[in-house]
Image (cartoon, rainbow, N blue to C red; front, side):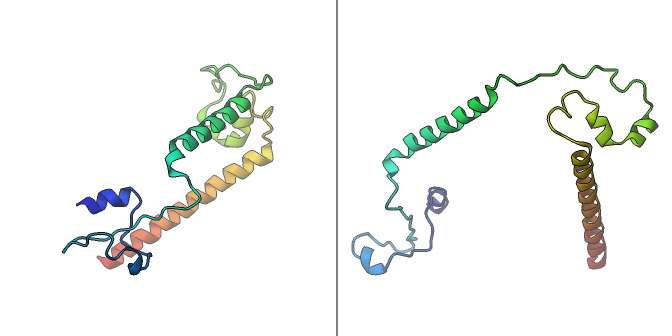
Length: 145
């Protein structure tokens, strides 16, 4: 049962070290499982917590630097009656891309109608592929039954 614990710690049952290097140095029990954990020679494993902390601080500094820009604009939330003048049918006809451009800040962020149309088209293509996959899988299941 200890094998699962050691696997979580990075050990494997595949031993790549030549048997002559460890034979006679470790006790081999009947029914025991020899496992190996490779220790990279250039990594100072005693400093891993410090290295992780330094990496975490670096990432947090980069995030703070990106969010501390003074040109950041925050728009108020959309009012509840943002689409009140349109019925459901005209909203569907208008299209998701055009409705998205009507949201304050979308065009200012650099989005264009072409970008939005492309992303909508990609989503539709993805939906078609998912539907086709589902149909194929259902047909396969019905053949198996």
